[in-house]
Length: 464
Image 1 (cartoon, helix red, strand yellow):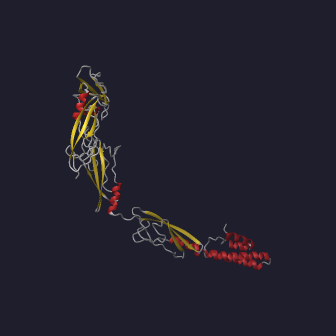
Image 2 (cartoon, one colour):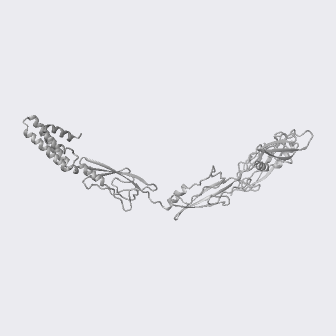
Image 3 (cartoon, rainbow, N blue to C red):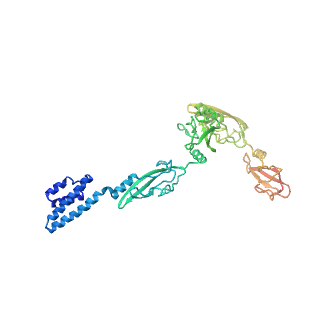
């Protein structure tokens, strides 16, 4: 119950019942202005009449209190429409932000106009939620280069003790991008999309449609380094036939906007068509070879073989068998001719298997008796060479030389220079003289107790 109504009820206890009844029809403060004014006059007249009739001092003091109370209450309530709160409320309802021509709350590009006074006298102050974008007075608007920014603007209206706030939300539009900026952004975002589980290094089917326009308006033109394999729109992919190998195709995009352009390339590996088990065996069979040691070859095997392969590049499993395992073992690691035999034919058979498919490849080898120490030294001397630096040769030595310390048949090789001041014994140090000078490099080839010497004549070129 409102304070004024409590006061009215207290006063009614003082005033006679007839007076109270006459005022009760206008007792609501929410009635019309004329009715309320009449109510005020009636209650004040009744209180004054009661005061005139009362002789008791205590009762007089009470009546005077309520006369003063209702004078103030009726005066304030009678002017409620013109109170500070009402004026602030009206100014809040009418408050608007002023925009530059062409702008609106959803698209701000320039300064804003913030009223400082309402038409009913309210003082208005403003505050921006992001002063880096919109200043508190609205006169400075800073647009981001690439992003729209939402900012809340709060207005505070005040008149006397009455105070209200009103909040506006506006969107400050990003700055317009230059052609170079648009191209750079669109090129950076450009990517190729694949179907299925494909990826750049494993393409087996058509690509998803290549983009022809960037989100910033750039136009994109595509070129294929091999359009017969990958079309320039990416919608057609022709895989290479099996056995021909995978194909590497470069797709190049030219991103253009106005006079600005940028190139971006993508490397794709298009996988060759799948092979059958028989195809994989056939490919591995064609590539299968034996790695011989030293100077050996199929027509002259004098030492055990290097490691025989047990798997092929295309996944074949390889098993080896020897026609004479007592001479050449199945794995090739053991070699021994029967006593008194100078040479013997041996067949190494490779069985290649993938899945349920198998094939064989046979190698015919001539196994010869092991070399004597003298034969080994002679063979190594015959194969021995000096290794020269780029552009050098026996008649023009300007750089360090390479001197092997072992022969192909196992002999040890030691070196000595006729003039170590020009060429060191190990060949790693070359000091070029004032004039071209002949130097001999002596190689001693040794195997057990057998040795021999081979001499190389080298001319060390003069300093230039």
